[in-house]
Image (cartoon, rainbow, N blue to C red; front, side, top):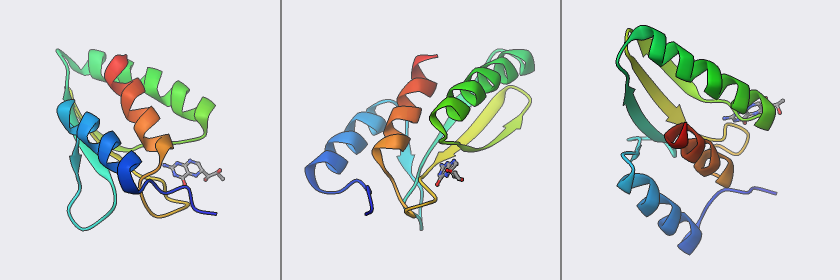
Length: 96
Ligand SMILES: C[C@H](O)[C@H](O)[C@H]1CNC2=NC(N)=NC(=O)C2=N1
């Protein structure tokens, strides 16, 4: 059974995410955010922490790093869209 977000839960989650700088990706059911850090070391340190959390949750980001920036896309590949797993990972990324 798909655990894709829909209805009021999806609207609520997306509103909260948008308030924190996340946006829907055009053409797919995914969210994206660009994180900027003071340095490459700060960016990579954050990525390392996220990697550990992601592995623990078995839910992983699509991302790329250029110097002090990390471009993140979150979606749940197994269901082809956004789930609560993406919302939780987004919140952890914001909170680190
Ligand atoms: C086999 C394993 O459960 C899957 O490959 C996991 C790993 N991490 C994942 N991460 C994300 N974002 N979507 C998935 O569907 C997914 N599947």
